[in-house]
Image (tube, rainbow, N blue to C red; front, side, top):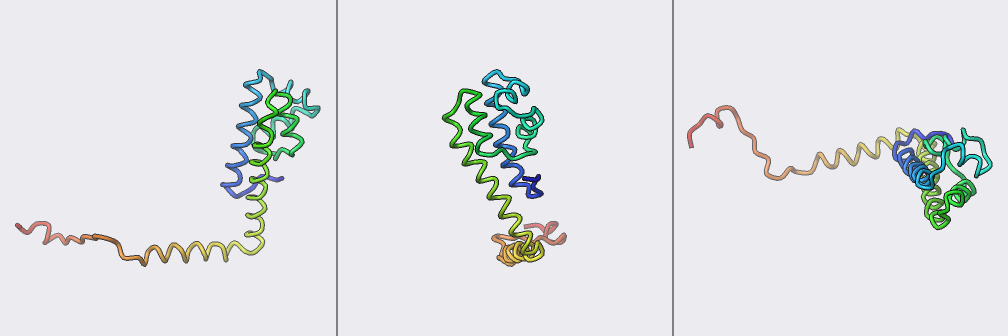
Amino acid sequence: MATSPSSSAQAARERVAAQLRDMRLEAGLSGLEMAAHCGRHSAKTSRIEHGKAAPTDSDIRTWCTACGQDSHAVDLIAASRQVDQMYVEWRRQRRGGLRRLQESALTGYAEQLRQPAERVVVLRAADARAPK
């Protein structure tokens, strides 16, 4: 999956990547050792750890096994799939037209502006100087 311009999807992908990196570091493995354990090139390990590439379910299972933390695989796979869904949703919205999406957001903002502000006090310069 290419890097998503959607900041929330990219941030979520980076959180999954950080969990994988932390898991590797806790296991005491270098990036090269992890790549060897998983049977892949070290560049792929680096791209996954830095959120530049989305890990597959198989990548996550292999990663967790190499780190001796198989119990974390299910949660990480679920988080990774959620990131994929966020990216798919962003693509769907983009395909439907960002203008329409922006207009709907703008409409919501305009509605907030129309709400009467509570306890708005307007002071004129003359009122501020007048004795009470």
